[in-house]
Length: 354
Image (cartoon, rainbow, N blue to C red; front, side, top):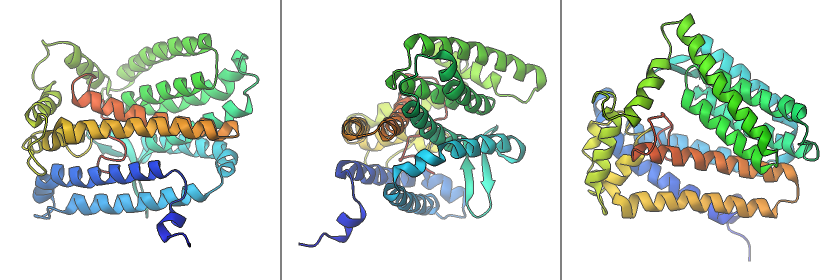
């Protein structure tokens, strides 16, 4: 019997493909519902503006996934260094010609391509690069200077360029890098030393930013951390978190039904940073939160299963690095929505708009 077109095109792990479809379905439903009011007001009554935009983005993303899936992993191995250098240059260029969005310069507008958040490119290429050097130097990881030169310095450069405009992403990228290096059997004492250096680096960077410019993000970092840990902070600082909690609490176990959200009109970034809260409000814990959490967990463990089947170090580290990157970001987004973590601005991977 001949294989069908779908089977021929979407080769590989069927569970992963099924999860991609699940995420896309949630994405289309949630983006449309959370954005309908904003689309009506900002785009001349066109309530499907964000839905169509997201559909195009998902279709293009699916095409990219298929193409990337067919390319031999050795190509990524060979290009890892160049890709990392490109992303570092993109991060630096963002400071010069980047677009200011929500009081931060994080994205760059590339003609013919559109707006790209340079940190997203950087964290992807950094994972590819770390997978390569971990495989390349797997027998020399007890050499502190070697690990510092080939792993920690690139991580520090990427995080240092991200940090001035996006502390949460810089910290997340650093943490993911440490997890990947730990899995790669870099000694724990090295990782602890790097963590200490990172804390000192953040303090120094914050001080420098406050000295050289009044237009910096340090006050925003302070306000978000204080608003999370202190009940004395004014309501304005807690506005996003409070609105998300209202959405979740009114959603209950079964939700208000698709399209029934009221907090989408009150919650800033309802189609991106806080889309998880809108999903719970409309679909409840039973049909919204639990299926999504389960999907990300299955994604993680399926990735671990794939790693065990890899016959070389590079693809194994690459798979686990990418899976951890996506899962960690998803968990951070969800924890922010339910109030377990300070507001970070991290989106829900494969679900949020864009």
